[in-house]
Image (cartoon, rainbow, N blue to C red; front, side, top):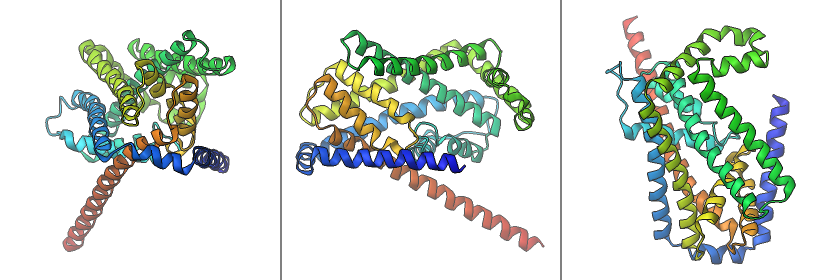
Length: 344
């Protein structure tokens, strides 16, 4: 616990230092000038586009949930509520060190509150997350390959590190699909390979893990049409990200090519691996590097700052929904407690 806290504070300190360094390196006047080119109307257009993309993320999750609830007509979660549940999960992810997965327990909690069983809730979140990672890794991998083909965008050592990282991640994704569809069991196979299945606590979870794996196998093997639709949605979400980058640059007076938009939207995503809330500093730094290597004259700090303002709107919506839900839970608990008191 102490080691984990130390590493978090270390990375956070590095991120903040990099963030502050970029501010001074860019200059306050340059930041103010670049921001002045980005009007409120431009920001609202970006926000609407991002909300549409977020709706696609929610739609993918909704399709998965509907599969699990098809035999239970009593559970019906309206799309708008699911949208807000996911927004709250995004908020937690953004504000915690696990920028890409820290909010998943929140999603599981909300589904449980909607009446869904805990095991089914976990299954839907795991499946949804794998689709997200699959599309993202495919695009980042494509970005790295394209950068290599187009003439040493990165130094040789950096390309090697990126390639190795993506091959490992791609291998994990491949094994997930292969082991799930072949009924081998993704989690149980990893536990056996690493000998973690010998640990008593994990052994106690064995039945629950096997049950989860069986449900995921059933999901992936029963309907290839649904699988294809979900993969198309996942690819569309990443393409939306590419278009968002193109649009922000356009509003800042810079015309990016598709390749420049693609590389700037995908490769910096690796910075979210670092255990720093919102990849602060790392995201700004990675965009600064990628734009420099691409030969794009744009204020990278302002570029990312605009995206962070968009994220801030999402965080506020997520916090409002989470706090409202929390107040409802407190009220329900107090009401139930009052009823019990009256009975006694």
